[in-house]
Length: 212
Length: 152
Picture 1 (tube, each protein chain N blue to C red):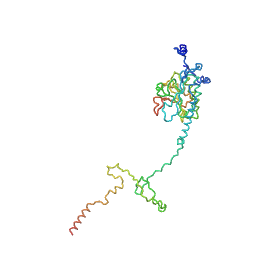
Picture 2 (cartoon, rainbow over the protein chains, first blue to last red):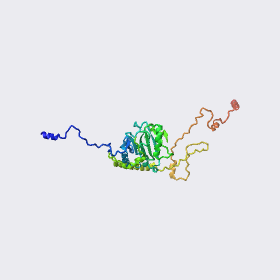
Picture 3 (cartoon, rainbow over the protein chains, first blue to last red):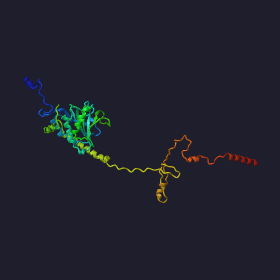
Picture 4 (cartoon, helix red, strand yellow):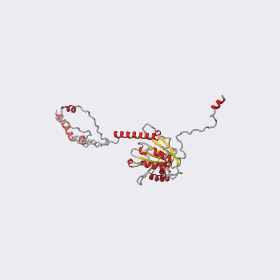
């Protein structure tokens, strides 16, 4: 009897057994893959077109987060290009866990530089979107750390709109960022980008506070 | 702060690592379906008149009031009378049927309502007595009458 009991309790110890690694959505990459870490973690969001029944919060969903150059390229190569998005479909790339909404406390005091490419057939939006993404994740669009919160692409019927969301509305910082944003989007001197403050954006006739 | 220029990032493109925590194929499929749906709705929209050419309608010719013989204007368009023999008997019934008369109300001129001046100059002659009263002739008339009475 005692031999049987010893046999049955052989594997039961008070010491913690080494646990099997769990499969989670945020499973980190092996260190070997993280040769080129980014300054921040970034999250790609997608807004699907509304069918008139769903609320805004149901349309906007995070796709995936990444924090290295290698992951960025893997994700970029795997998701559909901007030109393949349906009308009223949007991509958002935001730093850390900032939601691409005006209501997020890290966006609420800021605004956005915005430009609309109205001749959709004459613009390579895939290339420009990639340039925008690289300037944001590579942190070359800004001098100060974390001044840019994210970048947004809207596919609309008559235009592609690219917007750069900032944390503040400090004019001195905005001017430098706006100047670089124009270069990233390959705009000429005749094109002008506009800066809108988030606090006034909910009004229908919101006007830009800056043009560059 | 770790920075990467565009050139540096492009140079690392070959090192791409695709995370396995997300089903990219299903996501791409979902977007493809949404795009097809939005294009289909766009076609329907144009068929229903979204981009259909809008022809300019010929504007209705306004009725220009004409002065009648008395110099009056009316806003009611005057219909042409049926000429005899031109239309057949079939149109007679409809032509002779009592027509629904839509009353038209002329706006009264009440601007000078407190004034003694007539609104229409023709009223001047209408308001004047046709025969003027002559006191002397009236006096003579009464005398004649008296005489006549005396004679009788």
